[in-house]
Amino acid sequence: MNESDYPARYWHFAEDGRIQCDLCPRDCMLREGQRGACFVRQRVGDRMVLTTYGRSSGFCIDPIEKKPLNHFYPGSSVLSFGTAGCNLACKFCQNWDISKSKDMDRLTEHASPEAIAITAERHGCKSVAFTYNDPVIFAEYAMDVADACHARNIRTVAVTAGYMHDQARRDFYAKMDAANVDLKAFTDEFYVRLTGSHLQPVLDTLAYLKHETGVWLEITTLLIPGENDSDREIAALSRWLAAHLGEDVPIHFTAFHPDYRMEGLPATPAETLNRARRIALGEGIRYVYTGNVYDPEGGTTYCPGCKAPLIVRDWHQIVKYRLAPEGRCPDCGTPVAGRFEAFAGQFGRRRIPVAISPGAAGKAPACLGDSESTATTGDE
Image 1 (cartoon, rainbow, N blue to C red):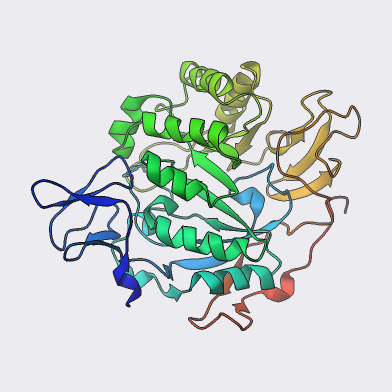
Image 2 (image 1 turned 90 degrees about the vertical axis):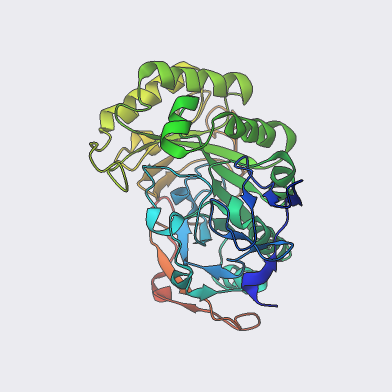
């Protein structure tokens, strides 16, 4: 079977003969040959297929902090990849060349789930991340990769906007170990106007992840000047997180840079991120970070008890690591929420492209720049 004809799940026939996609709240209705809004789920005859199964826009080994995940095995490396397309229509998309792509020829990498798991294992990656574009739209591929990874004791990470229907959400996150969900704003007006979607399904995903799964969860909010960066909205968002998810779910406030269809806006000032961090901390969120700007304080993990700095970061580089192996502060014994183990070194801030051949299963993959893969400890 051709990979581009891979049978998709999550659809049913409508009364008028069209196929309705049940993966996400867009509920795309498809006639013969039509594709959904994501572009990669297509009706072929009397079924729906995933046209990007086994195909990727590229593979790279990254620090886990780049996802961003600061409480999921800090310092470890993650094999990252994506495909093409997206089920949102963000006017500020910062990976628009991938997520908005309708050119399947750009998917130059072919890799089976087993080949991806073997690649991650050979290069010592703690996890594999589905990222760059939203893994929701290639859920079948991501779930198969997750199964292959778990067979080799490799964790899986979803970097996503969280826009899914309930059944697909349950199936998908049963295969994931961690997720960073992009909470783009805290008003439905923003979601409708700037993303072509709605807020409530994302909040539903967040609540589901926190209360019905064992998936480690962190949240990212990109602050866009004049759009979602007011004190009122940041405070409302923070209060909702504290009330509905608890105080231990980390949030990353990151800086917007002009891109795609919002090139006329200025970049987010560092002070906006610092202000958002202060507001969220004031609303009781224990772990609040800043991103896309140089801010050592905003990148540091502090003890929620005695406030001692426990993991000090310089961008994605750990420069000091004091957290006890079981995830407690060595000074006061307060537990830090997350997934931790004994810290034996770190991958660092490098980004290493990886080439996976179609027959990579059973043989070592090529890793560009692999000679640079020397770990350093946080104390160096």
